[in-house]
Amino acid sequence: MRWTPLQRLSITSGAALTLLGLGGVVSFYYATRLTNAERVVARTNRNMAAASRIIAGTQDGQRATKAYVVRGDSLARGVLQAAQATVEDAIDAMDEASEDNPRQRRLLESLAPQVAASFTEFRTTIAIRDHFGSDSARRFLERSTPPHETDSLMKIVDQMRDEELRVLAEHARHQSSTGTTTLRIILLGTALTFLLVGLSLQPMRAGVAARLTSHLSPVDSAAAVAEDAPVSGSVGTAGVRLQALHRAVAALAAARSPAEGARALVDAVAAPLAATLAVVVVPNGAGSFTVLHASDSAFDIVSPELAAPVAETLRTGVPLVAASRATRERQFGTLAGLDALGAPGAVLFVPLRLDANIKGVLLVAFAGDHEFGEDEMAFATTLGFLGGPALASRAFTS
Image (cartoon, rainbow, N blue to C red; front, side, top):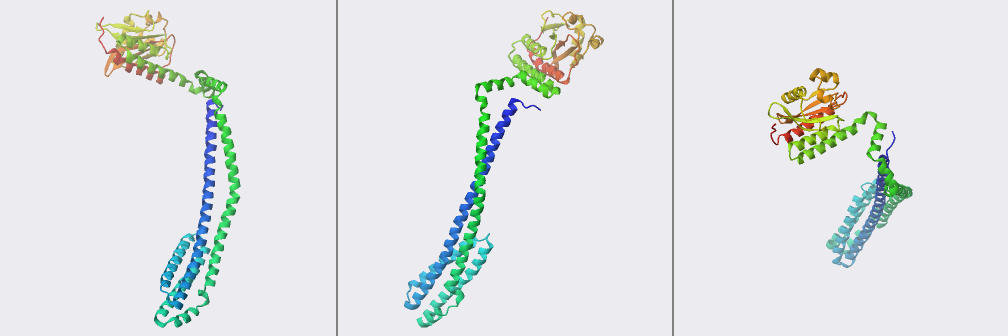
């Protein structure tokens, strides 16, 4: 199949837009990965800050407990409560951030009980100080077991920091491995897009526009259709008939008399059907017929021989067709009046209908035989429906 210039232009424009869309998709992918990397960095920083708050809060709680044991400082109770609240908030934040990291969660599960035990010990020490004195509280505080000491907590927190740094390093390596390739794809897609956009804008040049317009002219388009699909050669003819119907509708709407309407019908049917003669005949109320308009001014009288098929069409409201000379003579006789005007061949009688009433007949005659297709009959019948109302605007008399 040979591509037409319009098809090639459409393909070029579509390719440019497709590449532009792909570039946008790749850019979105890269931006998403960059945003995810920034989120990982932010989460790592938050987790390490939370781990630091756990250690700092535990140490603050220990100092407040010792201050209360030694000096009985009443402010130490508030400091201890604030330190415990800070540590609990930090543990909750790390618990939420470590949902997708099993190793970090195991470390957190090991850290949380130790921190809770440390603050339980601090509160117990304060209670002993209140009830049994500072000496008893000092002895209880100094007998802390190794798992609850600050050094053990620091070790777990250091492991948690190492785990966060490991996850961050993995994301950084993956981002680095794909970032360069992604940027190259974006650059290549952008360059190809600009190239195809330049090709799409070529019709703006006067010479290219002239060649493209000449290729898109009706003659060349019809030739291309005939070359690529000979069977579809009737498409152009159908377009001609459709344009004729449009013109007929406009002319009938503007017609001020039945004579002008008859002229519009004759003009509409003659060229599309390549007819030799087209005539609009109406009854005159005296038992005979009047020629309202004919494509050949020499046809001004309806002969008795021709009056018979016209009357039959008026009576039945059904189109009468004779596709050949032999069929015409067998059905209607010789119709010498048509022969004298160069139309000895096929003939078609179309009723001009207004609802159930027939207001006239459209006669179409040919110089030779003519096989009427379904589309041609539909075209003629449509003209009959359009012409009926135009002929009913006034009565006809002899």
